[in-house]
Image (cartoon, rainbow, N blue to C red; front, side, top):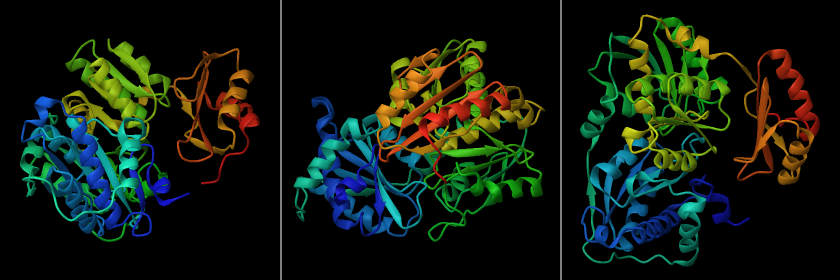
Length: 460
């Protein structure tokens, strides 16, 4: 496998610095991204100065400074100007693309990966995601064929811009506090350490900060989906008697919540809870959720008078479904939450505002708000090493052919009292299983039946 095969993923470009990702790659990605994004513009947009520029941000990784500079030089060489946002969370880039009417943007980040990683998340006009099937293949081809040149084309420049105040105003438009709250927030030594003070400073949302220091090592890996990474937050919730806790990933586009008792709240339960909130504001709207989410999500959407839309896993699919259905809100089990009034993009900053608004609107604690949503028992996502993924999914469909089967994303089999989904990894010889049942006994029984077909789970 060559270097480009290693770093070009399904939804972004990512690898270890400097062996996989270096300044030369950054320049070529900047040039290629600029060329591709410019090709998407209409003739009218190409005549607008605002559209002939690319928004660029970076996260807290030390090597991000040099990579960003070389990336922007590549963009200039291709004939586009750059707006340099500096060190920001990824959702700030989505906001800036729309706020400025730019042709797209690049965030230099490796999200939840260890500190030695870096990479590039690329978005098109209106913050539409660029993934493997929506442009990354074309960008990879350009990267593989170009040589670095020193100069730009035409009147292009790098303009540094501070959009924190505009971003703060945008995010706080989602905050409607009915009473003051105290919240423990773990920034994971990532970009939430900059975002939270800039956005939430001075509002009636008192923050108890954890790991807000950025630019060095991580106190724990910046991946809130791993239970061990939430222990510090859980301890802080117990110690400080806050209303709830939230833990962000490295670039602050996703997060996980714990309730006032320090118990982890599943992201699909957050989706169901916030669906009720948004459907109260926008009756009859569509709410999008990913295929791994609990059956309770669709039940709550329907009960609130909304239209449930089940979708494939991944932000590219979720954002497209949001746009296609004019959905008001969407949520994934991975901690990504999407908002119509945020250009259909995901935002850790905004979901914190909405959860705080929902909790403050009642005297009931978060644990009581999500308690009625725990009607089913879930397995959590489990990986299985499988070489012939498609053949194994076909075998599963045949084994459980008496259930309701669909192939929206992998294979899903539904029964009245339990269901499962098995979907393939985009990059590894793995199948990922999620199973839900009406009670623990049935869950364990059905897990044994499914595992008899696909084998033993991979040890994490």
